[in-house]
Image (cartoon, rainbow, N blue to C red; front, side, top):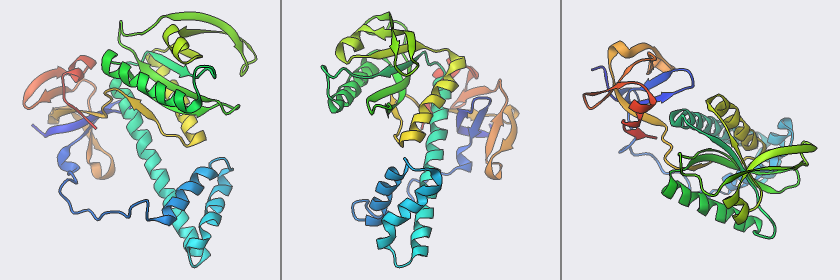
Amino acid sequence: MAYQDSKVYFDGGHYIAVPKENFPSRKGRNIPKKNSPQTDTKKIKFETAYAESQALPKRERKQYIAEQLKDEFATAEQTKEYVKQQTERKRNNACKRYTRLWRKVYLQGTWNFFVTFTYDNEKHTEQNFQKTLRNTLKHLVSRKGWKYIGVWERSSSERLHFHGIFYIPENAMVGELKQVSDYSTKQHRMQTTYQNTRFSEQFGRNDFKEIDKNEIVQSVRYLLKYIEKSGEKLVYGGDLPTYFKSDIMDEDVACSIGVDDRKKLLFDNFNCWDEGCLIGKVSPETISQLRKCN
């Protein structure tokens, strides 16, 4: 047995193994504590200015942030260097979030709806809409097995919406999906959508669009567009691990990849093992029997 208890993820084309001996755990290490955000005034000012600068053209963002932080440093060069470091930190964190997102999306495999929720002014305020929808989805996750990845977004009229890709198990839909024809102010033409009666009654406007595996990538990119535009973070619901665990045999490794060849590219039909027991060739059914982790 070559690599015991490896983490495995799917990158959209191939399965990649992450041997634990090549990526030792950081648990137990004496890692210096970072300054509390409440006492780091420079970081607080940076985060505020960074969020405000997202509405500006890219070339003007760093200049705006530096202007807001200039009183925190003795020289303009120090300010510039700090903004550069913090901007790079934000960029690296965003890359890590995007990587984690795609691994969760691919490991779940089955997504069957792209859903948009908004609200009726007569039913909710914006704050109440957010709170109530989060609570409703939380109950559907725990009681019906729903899973979702979504983002809050404001339309051109500043009205709050929630967009997400959903996995709704068979016979777990609440309410009924009814076909509705109305006028789209965005597209300036009539459109046909499917609205859920339960959510219509509780919140107002909604749109449940069925998607298949060929539309998943496009749907996720649609969500990412809103993140890049608004700076919002993704919202996850349900059991959405990043990896499954398997022992990996030498004969199932196609080659080593990554920085210092620490990861292993696996053949498409590799065997999955759990603590020395063969579970089967990799497949959704086999993966469902294996341990998961993040």
